Length: 368
Image 1 (cartoon, rainbow, N blue to C red):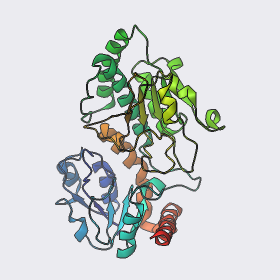
Image 2 (cartoon, one colour):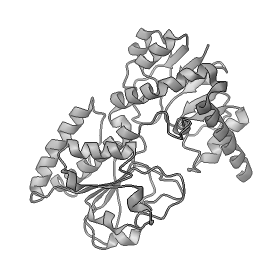
Image 3 (cartoon, one colour):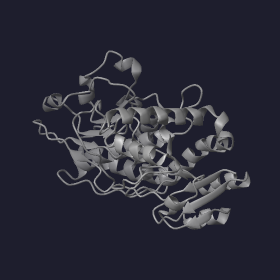
Image 4 (cartoon, helix red, strand yellow):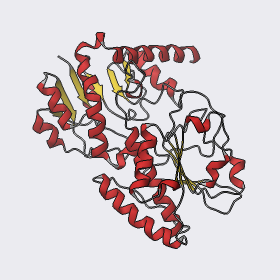
């Protein structure tokens, strides 16, 4: 019997869940055992899990879980802890691409003989991720990008207000479509140009779909992908769009898309949304900011010699702007792979994830 333990997320304003009540019911019907930590932040009420038969426990009890339990989550483990980790964890660890703190988290698993099966690297035999939040990340990222541009026109010089989750896509679209109409009117009727980098991927498609949904004409949605970027950056064309949404998947070093010095010159660009959010990656192609922003402070100003304001959104869990829809889509896609835990030793997906973890642990040992 496979035992899953859904831990409560501790990242501020994280409302998503890797396993939804509907997914849990399917798994319980197959004979899985599921424990769910109660959470006041999760978009799904505790009662929704209890109703389908999950065993409910307080927050943080995963540390006492039986060794055979898979600890399932989404975002990073609580900050500031250094104790060895003994379980097998399924989550987005954000430590396999040499991000800040990667050696510390891997050493905790190494010391405790635990394992990371990273959700970002669950790939099928064709190398495609079995489940991803990419579409909703792009969708939400474009939403904040357009909304920030509107805010710059409607409330110049004022701080962008905090964001709270929206109940569904239509509510989000309606809210920003109305703001866009008023902002365009103040902009002499000129609709902003939205440039999407990585437009052909799931994330990029989400960004383009949002732009269309709020009324950005197709000719104002500039879609770039590998064909347009094969020669390598920098790309001055980016500076001529009002809104730039970066949706690429960074898996190797690439030249920067633009340099800080380029921003001092002529540009229309006033909003950058780095959906990819490789903030601490040494090869971040947007080298003009160094922090992750949050939903309560969604953008950070970039100081340039050009008087036109420039702000960056670098929230690393954008889909939680639409937590219910994004969680349902992700959990539904993940379900067949979770079922394969019944025969994990035969699964290429889980085998590949564990092999990658072992490889990264060896790399960590070599530099510590």
